[in-house]
Length: 182
Image (cartoon, rainbow, N blue to C red):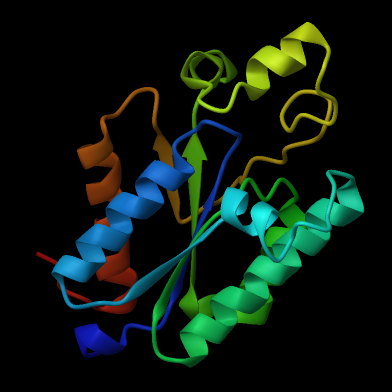
């Protein structure tokens, strides 16, 4: 496979503050260094754009994941890499995304981080709002998060630094998609 036509999806899932967006951006830069065009599909960006009409009910979260899956497949169909960084709390919907995109083009990465560490990072103020009672339907607390049981990659971001996490993903990409990344 030519590096400039790498067509696959890296799906980063985890609770808010686990490091999905940070990893997605680092991965996009790594791919760019290797002449691979990677497009990030970030949950917050989706929520401010094409998913602005959605709330946080289970059905809205499922629709959010469906739209992200459609975007990722469109990017793959154009011969490029999609990097999805989305809480994606439901196992069944992640499986639907994998089936829709294609199991041969889908790499699930569980970005795992303790609730306590995510609360410390809390760049959006969500944990503080939840703890004060001004935020409901918070994923991982009063709204379900079904952690992947068999993700292709399981990274504990509160135990490893960014470079080690990134290299772990890159190694799996190289093995799975027969790429050589520098």
